[in-house]
Length: 203
Ligand SMILES: Cc1cc2nc3c(=O)[nH]c(=O)nc-3n(C[C@H](O)[C@H](O)[C@H](O)COP(=O)(O)O)c2cc1C
Image (cartoon, rainbow, N blue to C red; front, side):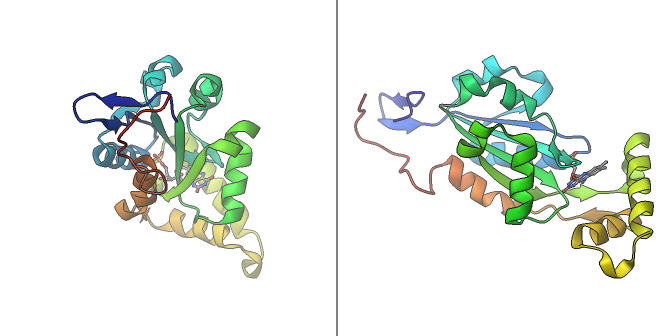
């Protein structure tokens, strides 16, 4: 049993304190985090305003970060504090434009999780938004350079991600979907496997 669970003595219901932590550059991840906090009745934190120690009083931590060059923004907060947080339920969601696939999941885990996190942390890939005109100067230059490089290749040889990059540089894209947080909510609220209400406490 999760030793961080608390029991409300009057209702005998196991409570699940949820922290939703996010790091977002242009707002997509923030919006998903707000939705998740709303639906789980969790406390919402921007990653730079919270320390690992502050998260120790929660049972479940949902961490979300925008994807930049396959890196999950701010994930070092979890990586650096994992030793003290690892007995909790930890769920990570990334917000990017890439579509979910087993290969993409593996790649993201490889780049962002430690070996131990890869075993224990659930990852969800959500899809965000992109508007070249809204990017800061560095990001804009990076995307334009990337687009030019892709355009120099044989168009027949382009993979789905490369075609997606060209497309989103030509036209703003918003593929955010509130429905896509449902599996995360199910994980947090234990609808996936463990019943949330218990009658007795076993220590
Ligand atoms: C410089 C740059 C690099 C990006 N790299 C990736 C990437 O590696 N994978 C991906 O799926 N999306 C990538 N994106 C798209 C962003 O992840 C997407 O716009 C996301 O919604 C941003 O989240 P945020 O608004 O919370 O920062 C990139 C965007 C920019 C501007």
